[in-house]
Image 1 (cartoon, rainbow, N blue to C red):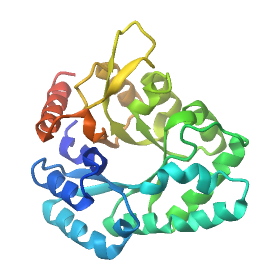
Image 2 (cartoon, rainbow, N blue to C red):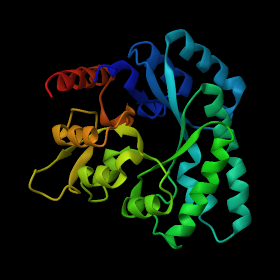
Image 3 (tube, rainbow, N blue to C red):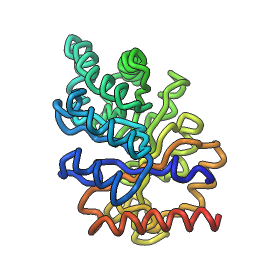
Length: 272
């Protein structure tokens, strides 16, 4: 991967609950990443007056802010998947603050969780229609809404593509495995519709066990996922997007492990 620095990055969510501006300082400074995803944690962090300093720092350090992740993602079932349709339509406009923030930052994507871990209680065609409604709103700001494979949606990926062949996804390995799926199967299902990857690892207790039996999410190359097979599969579908490290703060000790993870990634790519 010749464009390694342009395709590998990190999410500010890795440093939560550190303040966003402080996390961005770490990303640009000590870690020297050139790509990142911003997890916006409050309404004030969507405002241009707040984002101005981050945009200036990104430009000064040559950092590409590739995606924005809304802090309301956990509420998306209540906001959008409701029988009270007025709330659905008004919530679409509520997300304008994230689309505007992404536009200002030069981000390409806004991440959508949607159904989350809840059971789908409407026809999948109706669900797809709601997603497309929000996606069309995002386009007005020149950004693309990506559906992350959080929870239950893993079961419906092929249906969503059948209904809307243009839908695109954020693939997160930990959300695949935590639902009992194989990463290779989900890559196969998503195919060319993968636009963005949340990159992480898992420690599978035994390679012969069901892959849903895992330890915690880990930094890339700090577990035992079979990255050789995963990257071959990604190469088969000609994946050209980013690899954004996204773990939780309790999944690593300090920033030196993040640097080591990046070093292991580089070494891995040299050997495949």
